[in-house]
Amino acid sequence: MADAFGGSKTPRRVEYDESHMTTFSRLAILVAACCCSSGTKSYAGEKDKPAFPGADWERVAKPESIGYSSAKLEALRTWLKTQDTTSLVVSVGGRILFEYGDVKHVSVVASVRKSILAMLYGKYVVNGTIDLHKTVKDVGLDDVQKFLPREEHVILEWLLMCRSGIYHPTDAPDPDTSDDPPARGSQFPGTFFYYNGWDFNAAGTAFEKLTGKNIYEALQTDLAQPIGMQDYDVKRQKKVSAMPYSVHAGYPMWLSTRDLARIGLLMLRGGEWNGKRIMPDHWSEYLTELITPAHDIFPSSLRFAQTTGPSRWGFGRMWWVWDQPKLPAGISLGDFTGAYWAWGTGAQFIAVLPTHDMVVAHKVEIEGDSPGDMSPLEQSTILQMVIATRCKGSCK
Image (tube, rainbow, N blue to C red):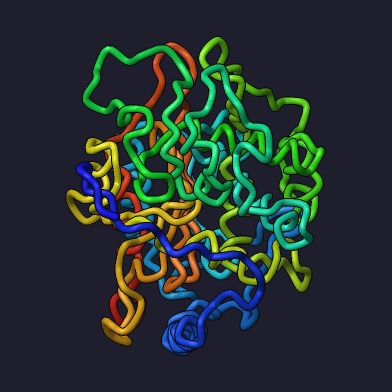
């Protein structure tokens, strides 16, 4: 049902399993893989098989050997010095093509945490520990303000989509009311996207209640250790209370840029890591299915930020997804076809660009007396400049 805020129709309710995709979806993925194959082969100048980092990352010795320009990469480095970027990692084919700043420095990431939590969900959804069709009432997610009758029927999957329609406060009111959520009870659950901190924090509480595991400990055992994250320390992690407004705490994460790049590579490889399955088959596809197109993103300031200039990001399940039809709009692929990213405060992001077999991990220091920040256009420029470092024709 449409609503006064321009929300889309009720999203298709997908119960995850390894056969949830339609025949057309499988065909689309197959065709896309075929189309991409000629591009990924060009990255194999040094080695034919895509790499996975071990104790450390393997570096590309000469960018030209895989079709990139050293001169253009140095121009990127010069431009980054004028920005608030603290560190950047670009991997192609599982090897580091470019790095800037102290990529091993550990600092807090905010909204990127949400995408990582969604990755952790997969194992427990598949083994039946988490049922995404359970309601917030079933799971016991009652808050300081009690649920309205219609809110009690919100299912966990809608939290991942940020479509719960539950607009409980998570902190003190912002003097700027332009981005305020809709009124309580004004949106039918599952129908309207609003980038809502309550949904994400409640999803964290639900994960812990249903699995019996602390998020940070699950991150260590289910992701950090299996993919060899170099700088993750569970002792450095700490939650942020939302009281007295909400019982559901935030769960920021303290991570390095090179470890963010590993997380992106795991997504790019569909949850497989050097021959071992870390996330369930097709879970990364499930998370990055476009649910909310760019024009339906709310609040409006976030939508304008995402749809002006070259950027056009919609939303899947706790991952931002490039809003462009994969098929049947054409077999030829653009630079951002199939792309998705974990994106957060201050220009922290993990961007995954499948057509280039590429991961771009970017950090800005968001704590301290002078927290960094970059505009959406500046962030988009980083991705555009990285892509533009590819040689046109043969490298000289």
